[in-house]
Length: 307
Image: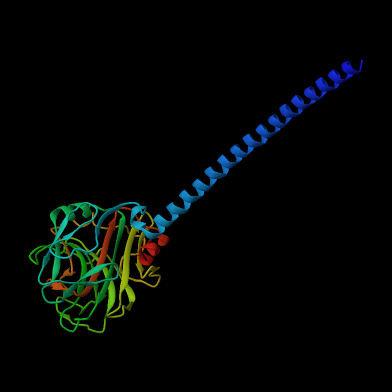
């Protein structure tokens, strides 16, 4: 009898041990699986967070990669030779003895005001000559020669000869005084002007900064034209006090409205023949010229300035 009880107790202990082992295994497996799943989710979330952060860093430090519509960009960072558009590879031929020096963003070109300018290629002209909307942006720093000439052209698209009817878009410093075909120099006027002239008539659109722009300091200018009209930005801020000499902020034109476009240049140009009958030169520095076929928001203009 005693032996039977011993056998019974041994069997009972064995059954209890096996049951306990099965329960522990199941519980352990369950916990282990849950941990693996949780760890997998956590890892994925961390990876996604890292990707978001990397993307933000890229867009903040390289705005040209995610700003829409960049069709031309001249950095002037070449060591020598002609300048090259980094978007399409179109070239610009250096005329005169242009200097290369430290600029606002990398290297800049120095124009002596005597015979230095950049003549952009026909391919470059074709690329930018049909814009009905868009953005033109660049850095500049000037030294006045307005006691010797009527304007200082920075950016120019238009006719290439004084024998032709006036057709041009020009961004320039200064304006001579004129009430007729005879002009007088005005070295006191150092405002920034943006002017469109069409078919030899009075400007079809012209506005200015309304205040003189400081000499020998870097300035960033952006012209933005879109469905709502035109805006000028100076150093990242809208030129809210800009003065319209002809037409208004509601007018929309960039380059497509200019009938004759034979020349695209930096540091060389003219405006209406009453103001500047001859082509003249710019003295100072130009850097980082960009052209977009989309109108920029004000926040995007600020990014160009800050980067």
